[in-house]
Length: 210
Length: 210
DNA sequence: CATTGTGAACGCCTTCACAGCC
DNA sequence: GGCTGTGAAGGCGTTCACAATG
Image (cartoon, rainbow over all chains, first blue to last red; front, side):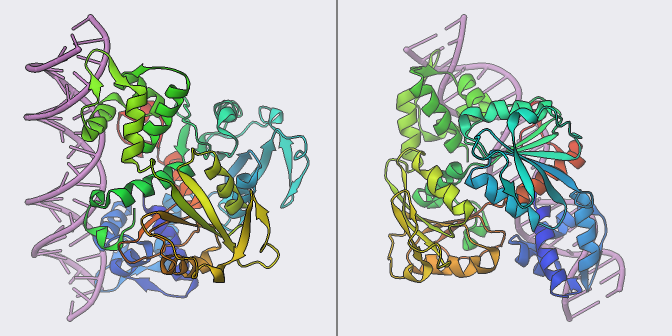
């Protein structure tokens, strides 16, 4: 999915006061190619003007709608080590659509700690929280050993989608959504391509993005 | 690329003393399906035994070799906020193949700080470092505004591959490799699928992993 | 008999190229 | 003339299904 990339590029363009973009310019700003941009956007509807391009602000609002960014998402973070803190901060400036509402950990030293006006609570309080599945996203930033347990607790608390940063392969029952991000896997993927440069696919080899 | 996932699953199996796996078992442990496992592994060579499966330790060593994990990779981290610290720690226990050798920042308060026996240095010292492109990976964990500048400095210092965590779209000249990871993009992707459950592709919908 | 390796079918995504529109 | 939207072509990865094998 490239919509988030377009969204970011459009936000930048809008902030710069640029009224209109061509598919080629947007492609450049988002790091993809023009044909993809046009095909993707045509899936959303006919929002462009031949000869001129797309109206930045209008397109931005359409993309934000499509991504569900015109509502506010509730974010719950479990595991407030360095990673948890980093995430708690990075959501703030992401533009209002995601708001951290609860932070959890097990370490007694951390319970009660204030992070940007939010107190860290003990995981045992999670079950009692009761979230709206279609509105709340859980973020797992705890050690791998307890990740599946945390995951289960999040589901039990009514979380509808989970982003897992722990180096463990988790399983959830539908309709809960799960997405995994792992630093070490990313490093290993990079290492693979350094060792096998020939495995880099397609014409974007000229701009070796993976 | 799924090799890193197999690698992790095999490592677990090896640690548990399990001598042999079938493609179905490995698929389960890695979170993919059996056909993919067999196709992927057959690309590496004929390492399985019909009727029995794969020798865990032998296959692990082959996968590690393919991923370039039988050499040691030098890792340089720029930007030692919470994220930088989290990354500096997570590489340690990843199993020896990645070793952080230098940490950089611009904040005078952080310069000189000791992180697991490594001192944080000022970015200006980066250029003088002189790395081996095919051995060194750079990690960008700084604010988006300075990410492209940091990226350029890493390339100038001889880094051959870069993992970018800053919410900015960077460009590098080949043959330098670039990989982007962005928390907010991941959250937005998750939000998209919550809003559009019908967009979830393929039969793995039964285990809604994205 | 359980399980691999793989050729063939399928489907999705990408890319091309151009007709239509401003 | 510049640029969009899209049908058609192409390429890549996934999945199926089965012959081969210890």
